[in-house]
Image (cartoon, rainbow over all chains, first blue to last red; front, side, top):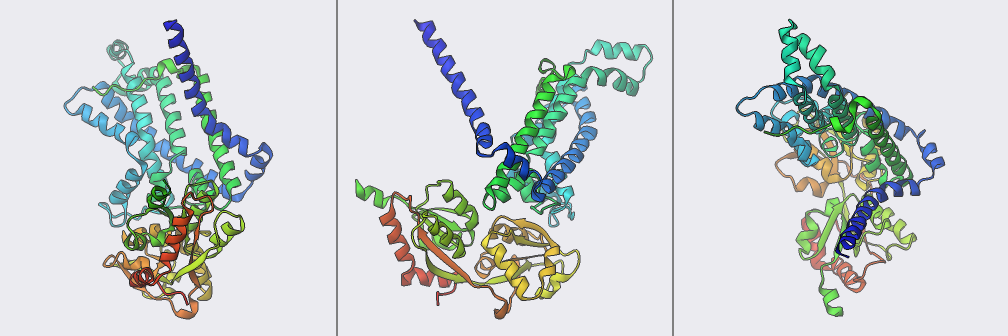
Length: 262
Length: 224
């Protein structure tokens, strides 16, 4: 009797949770027919936003990979005072409200900011905003992946005569590949969805700084159909990224873990 | 039971340019400030507003035609002004300086009342080409104000009443009267409101002399 009660509570909770998560996504597709969705994809507002989004997210992700990988390796392989503080710093953008990130970027890189740059309102500003909010997803995954690499194998490589650089590229990187790919894909997906920091730091100009999420917001009260079409497009891209990730054998979820902050 | 409903705070959806003055007129109500077009979109999606105050007449008129609000009334007027950061890094001293290449002009997006007024002003001045210098189409007038006051943009078009709220941070450049658009604010009771009597009373009070005087003190113009 009691076991049946618990089982039914678990069932109802699961059903409610899944339904709650699925409903808004389903609703977007229920309100826009595939034909109309397809027709709106040719809308120049949509194509411009798609190009801006892809370009800025790709560049931002490249930056995150190039700078984040060595940083993750250092944080994963060295134990030093202040390490956990640095890991926390890396993770902070993950929990920071995007509006705070936008304000911080303005305070740092604005014309009247600490560094006095003329970056605001340019495509570079979108890249910085995306890199700032998306980097923790990659760096955290990379730290976890590097930590999972067996130290004995690294030591063996070194005793067999391989230098640290060669060991890193021929031994560590291939072993950590799964986690790195998973982290990069998640960072890319998060970057595509960036909104708050971008609108504050980069503004919104079609073909320059108006990304897909900004187009959704701009079109919401002008042309609801376009907003729906762009939303549907974002759902499809994000879902495709996640599904691809699950199918990649080297990036299976069992290999994907988050970094410990100790 | 009815009295409780009447005494409850009204939810008033108001144009972003009313952000400072409405709480000064009546601090007891609950306000939601945004671009009038965004507020209209929210009302269309069923947002629980009692009163809608728009920075133009076209948007409430449209909602009235759709049966979403009662008949709108014009309650105040405004005018546009060009603002530059106090330091004026781009040395803008007249609207014609906006033609300079590379200048960072921030305006509100088309569809936002002040965005449409801005384009009208530029058209009246024969300065349509200045739009090539726009670096961002903002979602409401206060975003334009913030980006100029912060010093990040070289210039922006706002209402004269907005410029007064950031005195000391921006310098203003007037726009000649013949180039000014007709900026009239209309207010309407939302049809789906559960406090329609109180909402109507609030709108009536807004048209009364004490409230009108406060609007004028804030820089708004009397309805002619």
